[in-house]
Image 1: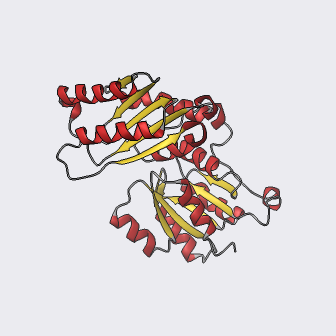
Image 2: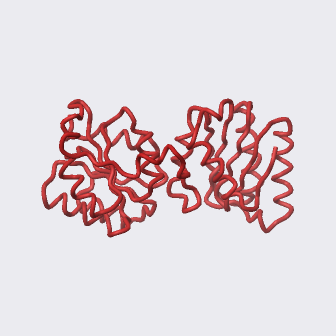
Length: 277
């Protein structure tokens, strides 16, 4: 079992790339994600680093895997052929030592990587520029998706139409994978493209990023409200500040999803759309 403290983000990035490329290669692997507001400054404290490494090696001596200490907020522990109970036990031990006297609890989540790799990748959305799904072959055909003219006629009447306006290619790819079979999905990478997509695709639900390369998503929301278009707009943002949420809701948004986000939240908003039912 390896423990990575230095350059852990870039090393874990390689794992993320592999997960996105082919989850089937991760048969019998699990990942324990431990997240806290802030662990103790273990990178500046050799004793804490030694103690954390000793805990992991003691519990996971006979297992193949790696633990990545990413920043002061996240630990990702990958192990093969291990029981969930063992991962939970080591997670509790680590939290007890790395949180020390801080009055907070850490969140723990275990992913079976063969079947839940995309759920893990979802948690990395909004974690900053380090964690991106690599631009490998599976991404080549989906930088964006336009649905116009004859394509619109081929859509299934019993499927909700969902438009994702998002500039990050990896996020578009993840959402497309998550919503496969749930809806008819089109995407737009910026403001200038979004207006044409809305008019041609006539979506029931729009997931709209606030920060886009050519402007603020709120301007699209204002236009949708002014034109009285029949679509539920759900704002996307990694900056879930009180101001962003209040401005979006006051402008007519039906909801606000903070990054990182869960697949279930996307589906919940689609199912609740009154324009489709």
